[in-house]
Length: 129
Image (cartoon, rainbow, N blue to C red; front, side, top):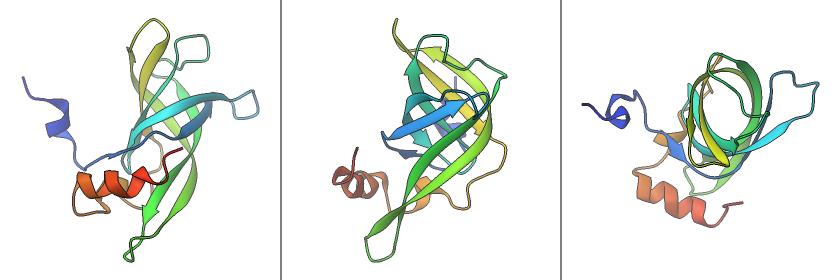
């Protein structure tokens, strides 16, 4: 059986920053923790309660992604995206991992900004929230 990591079209940026989401952004927002992001989608963890989205649901998500510059500095690019929930997996009795696909891709490929994943991890170490 082929690993899902091998089927991805682009590298994902793995980081742990907040993501806010809701089916209706005028309602109360739920908070999750970003796991990884690509230009076309993301995965995050959230509480295993009534606020957790379900497969097929459309949500609006607000999150920031580090954008690295050529001089080794970086800034945060903030996004609000409508997304469809592709998959929800139980992590434990209190947490679920949610995979979503954006309705509109990000303007850059977050996981392909550095030479390798080790470089990305080192650059993110100083700024992890």
